[in-house]
Amino acid sequence: MRTRFSDFTTSEQNGTTFVTAVPQSSADEPVRFDASIADRGSDDDPQANWEEIISTLAQGHLGNELMIEGGRGVIDKRVAIDALVESDAEHVRNEHAAHAVLEYLADQEIISIDGEEVVVLMSYEKIREEGTSSMLNNWAATLDACVQRIDSAIDRVKQNQETLQQHFEDLSDTQNLEQEYARKADELKQEMKGLLAGRMPSDLPDDEKRRFEMLRKRYHRYEMFEEKAASPVAETQGPEILGAVVEDMENIKLLLIDQSQEFRKLALSENFTESGALQDLENLESFVAEFGDVTEPSEQMEEKSDDEFVEDLFDMRESTTSEEVQQLDEDATLETTR
Image (cartoon, rainbow, N blue to C red):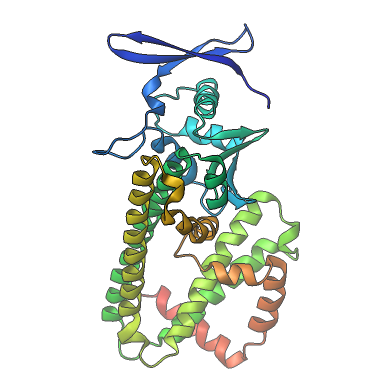
């Protein structure tokens, strides 16, 4: 394992214990920070001090760079360093300090560094085998990060619910919702077609590929709205459906909060490996591994590759009858003159 620091020494000043990370190279500066960064929780406050850092690492990478496999939850070391530097963590002033903090946490067996990977989580089996109670706090911090993502998603859904309710109130009796959403989807299809310019998504440079994927997500969203609008009860049930989504997410949030507290209390127990609460990790591993933007139409994105989606999209949409296209154009003209 390649490290930047050879030793970590402690000293006390005005009642505060500090850590000095001693660099391997004499050309590098030592890094000094508060040793309380590795303090565990207490019965009164079971949250460990390092959880803020773990939450920072997990927050931006759930379901993406944070991978749960082989009994470990790992983040690429470069990604972890960048996340710490970009955060407002008081112990991390620059990249050099970020390396020092990560290596100190590894020295304290809070995380581990395996080559170019930072191991922040361990599975149920690994925790029992190695007795790494700190990993329970890491799980709690990761669940907290999930809760923050859920809070953001709930806010977005509530905004969409309010927008949808207002939209229904503003609609005239003669306006056709299904047709409106079809027009929006067709606009996005034309924009994707213009972006591709005869190419397949797999041929696009990175910036254009990201733009295409954003357009595709929006297209699927209007496609879903179009399908829902075809239901005769869509106009009355739309806001209620989103309300049910909020309720479901609130319930998941409460479960995660409760579980994170259980893990923290368990980490303080001397016999934590005997607790049945660890069994819950088996379910949480897959949840965290798949956790992303809970309001995005991810299933449609996963069912087909971008190239397959484009082939089917243009075959399907180009078969629209001339009468339907004419009607869509008339609706678009009507919308722009308002």
